[in-house]
Length: 112
Length: 116
Image (cartoon, rainbow over all chains, first blue to last red; front, top):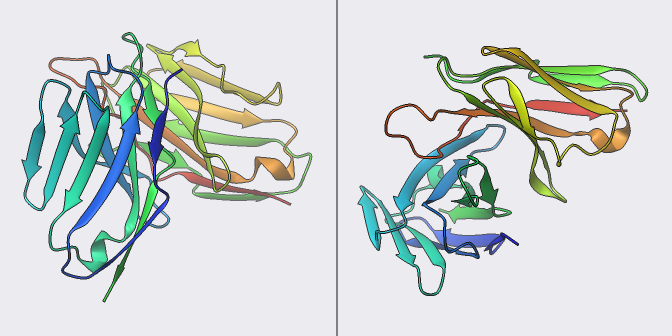
């Protein structure tokens, strides 16, 4: 079945780059997403990538997609303490049912 | 737009009581999702609607849970009777198929439910 996996924790120093990884199983996914959840808040769309793209860059964020290995990564350059949050990877569900298949989230801790 | 609105933000109740969570999706969105988030199980999809019609309720834990969407701008998730294991954060999200759209879902701030 459809599944999305992420490592649960990542700790980096302020100013370093963070790389959060995700693997997924559904090769027919049209879009893959990264959401951010700050403490006590809902999930907020950070960025997404269309499945026919290899890379997408948006300011400090770089998304890399390896369709062959079904691997998605999110790189945050110059990580700041305000980037401390839980990052969720998600893929479009099979068919056109608008469901998203979610990972468990990676908790990013940025140390000053 | 104000985004997805949920109420209440916090709810504390006693076991056996009825709990009703409310959601107002973004205007014009035709999909609405109810999720539950816990530390142990992560983010679980409970049910979702398209044009006010329930499409998939396979994630609803048991008969104690019910959801309705009487119109395009309002949905409720009801738990009756509530149990301590229902304690979680409940999120509502909406999305749109209009125009050029992805499957992006927009989340509300959540309702933190504590059942004593």
